[in-house]
Image (cartoon, rainbow, N blue to C red):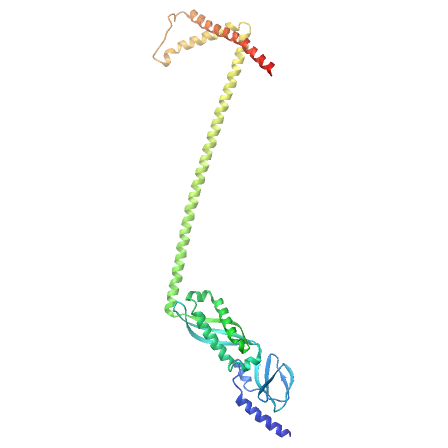
Length: 345
């Protein structure tokens, strides 16, 4: 009985090896997973692996990691799926951008199996299918962008490719985690033109910066001149104000001195022999004025009795006396008006 089971198991193993399709695993995994596990009734499934079991040719169940039991002859392991994150190297391909530039692009695709049943029965060769889908999606997305945007929007390009792959791979039980562009090769002529464009852009920036520096310098000079003029005008204004204030102060001082002189003169005239002193002062001023007549003008007016000094003094005193009488007559009226004002108040 044991020999019969061994022979049967060996025949089943040979049939399984002949009928087993290509596994969707990395090249390193293909070396150790080239043959499917044999049904030994008691099986130990490794962690992060899913073994798909068929019973009499139909899907039966998926073995979980750990200890599992199968029925000999009826059950057999049909597929082994790895639940780890799988890295697929997408081959280099040609693509044409929106501005008709041919690019050579390769990338790396990161996948994970979410549903082992769909990954086993949904597609014949998942690795080949996902690789072709990534290449076609890459060509389609590059055709929507210009060459400059391909370099600037690299991150958005990767996310668009991942979104497109996930829409098609949902029926396969596969989830695309991310897609990364490794290298972008540009034709030599295009590379030369890009280099010239970069140099022209740098020269443009240098010219703009230089012109901005010149403009800032001119603005600073103009601002300095403006501030200097403002300060000069403010200084001149302050000088004029101070000068006017000084002149006004001098006028006030002169007026105060004159008023004091008049008060002193008035007090002196009210004393005894004040009129005699006033007559003497008037005579002195009259003689002084008469002596200066011919110094300032060629026209000279001489009185008829220029040699009679006493008559001249007498005439001056008469004028002074008449002025004094007029002031004495006006004084009572002034005092009366002041008293009336006080009474009205």
